[in-house]
Length: 365
Ligand code: ADP
Ligand code: MG
Image 1: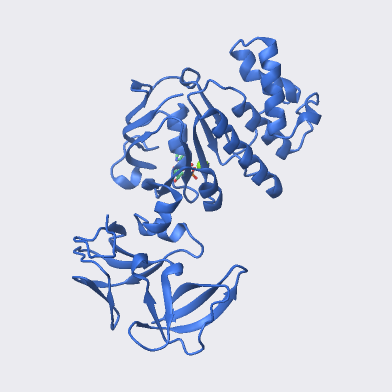
Image 2: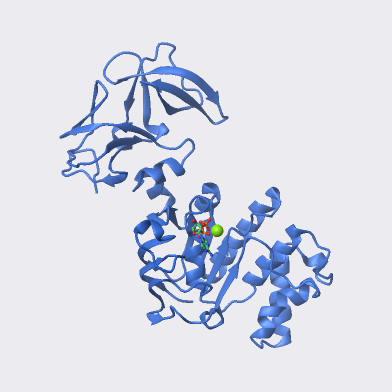
């Protein structure tokens, strides 16, 4: 196992990149802690596979270095990195049996046959393929072949890291949950460094200790699921994580207050920032009011989604979402919204800004 360091790393697929826009992966410095389970989360095309392939050695970065436990591996061959990588689509040997496919990475490492048999048995149980061990891979469904690919990724115990690039895409929905649970168990048992790429926030948040959120070639936040929920570092994180995502209000700052349209909101702390100012408040922290202070709003519709209700409001022509718990009465005469102070985030040019001074009751750390 190894700590993986990305040092001034960036990548452009163009031979002569002229501006930042030409980089599929924008400059990045990060240490992947040895033994941690990470999810790499972002929309399609944001650079996730580019980053993963640089770590595994399928791609040599145009700038910066990749270190394993401090040793420069930037241009080392994939085979010398001792990494297992599982891709979105199956990579199996059709003419081999399932058992031979699973054993292949171990035979390559010249493990003895008893040890190979033990590990193959264990992994085949994890992926639910005990009954098919002696079948040829040819003729199996894409779903079954992908399970073999996953198994091959999981069969070695001595790897520096396990990289998964959207591995459950072709897997049947009811099996996804089961396999993700097995991957998590594998991590608990062996403590490998794992990086799991996905565009699905539920997958990311349930799998990982730390989630790395990418947007447009840039890592915008690395944090626990709770960090991403409570303090989204970038408006994209607020919008992408959570269901529905964070509400954003254009605002101007005035010390401890913000003006949003004709309304004034108390921020609970002092902020100083310039650029495009927005106040971000998740639906869980929007308060519905009838009269009093607040921002004029009108209820458009209420969606019952089981455990809670989503209230869609019209605020000066923009849709704002609020979450009301099951059993909470929603007054018919709601005409304003307010913000729970602990749910207020301030953004300047899409990046979260910290309060400049603490006010009792509001943790601005
Ligand atoms: P993701 O895995 O998040 O969907 P990728 O890392 O595959 O994103 O792609 C990031 C960007 O780089 C995209 O704009 C994509 O079109 C571009 N890209 C990916 N692979 C290549 C390539 N081999 N040559 C040129 N551009 C590429
Ligand atoms: Mg990809």
